[in-house]
Each structure stands twice: as structure tokens, then as C-alpha cells.
Length: 113
Image (cartoon, rainbow, N blue to C red):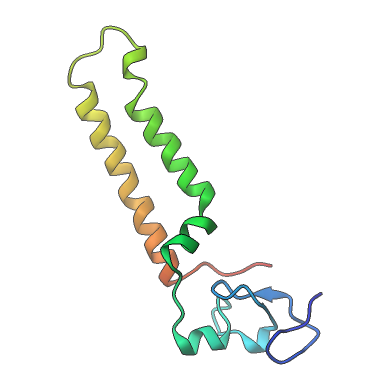
């Protein structure tokens, strides 16, 4: 178990989602997602950090989009409207995932470390 980087308590068993420092439960906010220092300063994640922490989700979105749009030339005899339908479907799939990333940056999920 690490020590808290704010009050030096030996119970720093959680991590702040924003500054990634070890924090005890008394130095965190009630929702247990950020330390009190990040809460007071209203810390927000930048786009680079948000993308880095959500690599798996972004990789899944890229895979679904690539699979939905580009297998067309490999399947002979498709209607010409194939690309229009699947590009629209890919965009519709990406909208909720992009909104999740945006709202996760504002209200991150609870840390279970």
C-alpha cells in the first residue's frame, strides 16, 4: 500500500483520475474520482491525455469503423449504395462513443484501485 501524497497517511490506496497521485479516502471527494486539490482547481483532462487513457475504446471504434466501411471491395456484387449506408452507420456508431469520451473527461468513472 502506498502512502498518500497529500497528508502522508499510509492508506493511499486510491489514485486521482486527473493528477494520478496516490490518495487516501479522506483526501478524495465524496464521489471518489478525484483528489480535493483537483476538485478545487477544477482540473480537466487535455485531449492527448484523454486519448492516451482510452486507447482500448478508440481502438475498438477504429476497428468497427474500418470493418463497416472497407470490406465492400472484397465482396463482389454489392449495390452501389453500400458505401453510403455503411458510412452513415459508422458515423452513427461513433457519435455516442465520442460523447462518452467527452463526458468521461468531465465526470470520470469511480476509481477502483
